Image 1 (cartoon, rainbow, N blue to C red):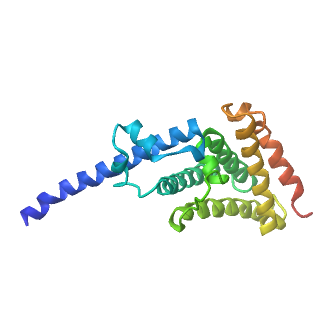
Image 2: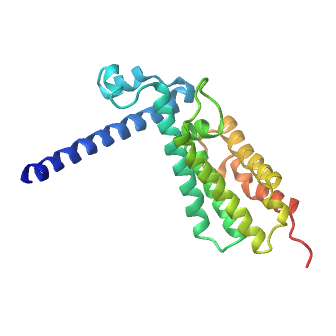
Image 3: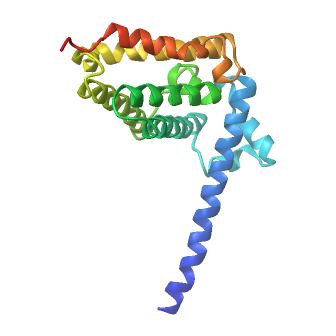
Length: 214
């Protein structure tokens, strides 16, 4: 019995070291993507930065695409958290919708390499796994819930909560991120050439789906 208890702390330490190493690999990968572009990542470059031989990385990630897959999941979780935290501080309905998506856009503009991986297709041959795509579905569902909340509060027409309405909102939001990252990268969200128009973009969506007449 004593030997069982003695073995547990060592196993925990190994798991902690492994988790810390994987987190370090992903941190360095994101830095390299920022410098070389999302598609320019290589395991050899990560290994050089860490001061280890490339084969050592295969103990943690089986391939370059496995690194991308982990980064995709990590980015989607962070994006979804930004949506949630932005909406939580606002009144229900339209204010929560606009605060949530604005926070999500801000996160995307402030994290260009991950945003490119999440919202563009910069890596030929990479498709996120079902496990890593699950946080993306959570983020989409969060936005859908915010739109539904605005409809429920009488702030938007019910058509805003249809597939077409959500698709239109997605087009508008993606346009802000794409234009900002492609044409004015590195500028703060509030001052960005394109991201500063976020309030006007959201107003356009609101005007397209005005609440039904009382």
